[in-house]
Each structure stands twice: as structure tokens, then as C-alpha cells.
Image (tube, rainbow, N blue to C red; front, side, top):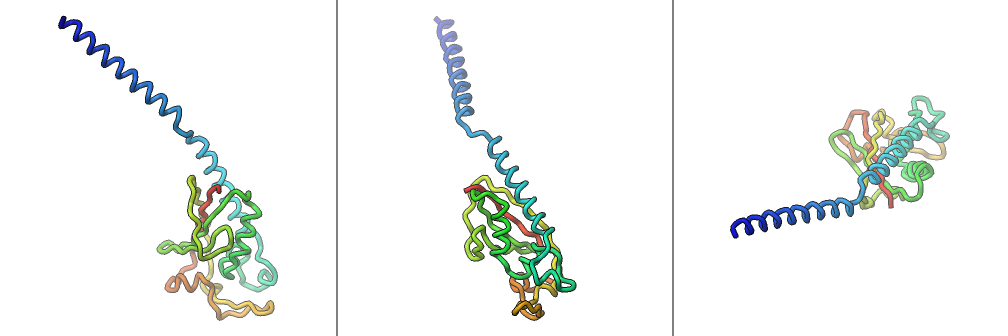
Amino acid sequence: MKDDKAHMMVIEVVIFAAMVFLALIFLYQLSPSSTLSDQYTNELKTWGDDALYSIAQSLPPEPFKSYPDYPDSKLVHYLIANDYSGLTTDLNDIFPPTVLYNIWISNGTNSIFWCNSFSDNSTILPLVDPVTICHYYVSIDPNHLRFLEESNIFVFGTQSELSVKFKDYDDSSYDLLLELWYK
């Protein structure tokens, strides 16, 4: 009789272990694949890095590229001139319409929101996972952050938003952070 109870307990433990094992297999089959998420973030990372590099290597628009000592980077020009629409137009031409983004600028100590994929510099778009972050470092002479454009005449004196938002920052290194995700 004692042997029957022991056999029943062993059978109960084996059945319980088998049920737990089958439940784990079932839950594993239901869980989403991380491969798909990795594929999307890798694709976004490549697009973001390539887009920032391409814009940074392009010449600024006329008449700025003809000014002596003016930075020869369209990306730097957009930051100097507070040209949100120019930057987002270039990025939106590269990205498919299903990609949204926020752009941040950092000086290594502080970060500020720059704009979103709709050229809006006051609304941070809510992130949707998975999110990819791309960085591009730019160097901007602090003197270039003070300018005014009037009828195609380049006059130093008025400040760029970077100069205002990073008012005590006298260095020239900035990090552009691009947060990318799919709608």
C-alpha cells in the first residue's frame, strides 16, 4: 500500500513536470520573434546613418556656399540657420513615409529637442518601439551661430537657436541625435 502511494506521487510529479514543460513550449511559440524587431532597427539605423552622412557631405544652399569661411556642410547650415523644414525635407526624401523621427542636439552636457519629422520644433512625437537612435557629430564655429540673412546679404549679429539654447557653451562640438521608428 505504501508502494502504491509512492508510485502515485512519482506519477503526479512526472505529469506536473510534463505540463509545466508543455506550457513553457506553448508560451515560447506565442512570443514574438526578436529577429523581426532586430531587422527593423538595423534597417532604420542604416537609413539614419546614411541620411545624416549624406546631408552633412552636401554643400549648403546658395548664397551661403559662396561666403568665405562658411561651413561647407548642409547639415551644419541647417543648424546654424534654424532651418527645420530644410532638414526634415531632406530626411523625408530619404526615408519612406512610414518612418517618423525626433531630432535632438547635445553638447555633451545638455540635450535640447530640435524638431520632429513634421518640421515642428515644439512637439516631441511619442516614441513607438522599436526605436533606433543615430548620432552624427558636427563642429560649428561659435561665430557662425550669430548671423542674419536679409535679401541674400550675410550679416553677423543675430543668434542661432543653438547659441541661445546653449548660451554658456563656448565649444564647437555638437551631437545630433536622430530617434527613428515606424508608424
